[in-house]
Length: 151
Image (cartoon, rainbow, N blue to C red):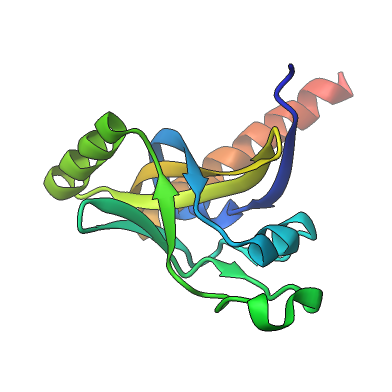
């Protein structure tokens, strides 16, 4: 059985705003209408983040648009959703987040073998000069690649 992966949404802004140290694959607790809406690609990860509450990991500000045919079964688009990780991963993340000033940022949302998964990054925020350095580095690499392809 191969890993059939269908990417639903990516948070491109996260790699621009943060240094990504580690990534984790999390499951999500969702309702049926939310899954149907995800299959249509109606989700926004831009402002979302994850945090701990009562020893459990939750994702905030992830906007899943209401399903058109969902009527009374639709949930609040910005409701807080529980993330599923192994206990040892949760303990490690709690320690790093409290001690080292990390933040937890969703990178992408995808279907893997019919199940919804969230790629969660352990990240540190970039300063403005770090962002400028990253942009300059990317431009330099682009120019190098362009000159190589000309030859």
